[in-house]
Amino acid sequence: MSKFRKRVIGTLLASSLASGLLATPALAQKIGLGRAALPEEVAAWDHDVRPDGLGLPEGSGDVLTGEELFSESCAVCHGEFAEGVDNWPKLAGGMGTLDRDDPLKTVGSYWPYLSTTWDYVHRSMPFGNAQSLSNDDVYAIVAYILYSNDLVDDDFVLSKETFTEVEMPNAGGFILDDRDTTELPAFIREPCMTECKDSVEITAHATVLDVTPNDTTDDGPVAEVVVATAEEPVPEAAVAEPAPEAAAEPAAETPADTAAADPELVAAGEKVFKKCAACHKVGDGAKNAVGPVLNGIVGRAAGTVEGFKYSKPMLDAGAGGLVWTHDELSAYLADPKGYMPKNKMSFAGLKKDSDLQAVIAYLSTFGQ
Image (spheres, rainbow, N blue to C red):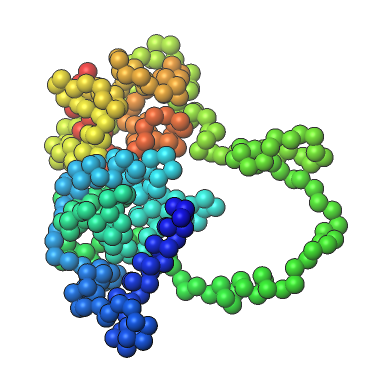
């Protein structure tokens, strides 16, 4: 017997056994297979959690514990900052993109109920080792995912009691599915099979997306397709010609210099920097890691840390005169890929202006 047939027969037997196991006594007696499920067996399968938190088990987990667990169990697929690796799903970011043709659907931007996140992690993650996490582990990992989406602070502890305190941004973004009345009629009419159009002509190519070949022999015009995230040049601020005498000097006005004197702002920046610390180091003895050391970053020319291998866009920007002033750092840290496409930093960016001001103030306290 082939392996395929064995698998099929095994699946059918397992399905029949499951059906018999969960059958009512009358049905079990009728088909002569299995028995009624015991209450404890039903309870073992009853893991669903409602949006109002009903069904959540006892336990709790904080953001910092979740960060460690996420790094160990989830980051290989979803990235250290929940930004996604290769084609694995992004779990953070995408705020304000749902009205676009190509929205980024993440836990923060799209999922309406936190119960969906908790239930999915609890049932199905980590990939290849599902249901190996304790309830406390799940609470902590979900807390970190919320933190990665700027929905909670770094001292947040998720539990049954705090579950309903979390407000998901897209909670009101779903509507009843009315496609049976609004769309179905358009698809049940008699289809046109011949002479449906007077003429057909090519109006544009999708070569940027590698969907159609770049055939210039047809009689249609070739439209230019622009994909901002892939083709956008380095921002003007990064390539502007500097005055020769000012190229290597810090900008005259750096608000962070004065902000750094505010101990509360610096302390807040130290907390925000925890999002960066996995890749960047600061302080005495700091060395390059996944990212360059950030000592002296405020006022320094881009791409100039000794011994770090920068991306070409970053090196070009530095050669073109980009200096990390307060304003340039703020723009870059808010949207690294949008500010400088194809640079190496995978972090999605800081979305709160208060976090940007604080972390720059904190970085300004570290000299060369």
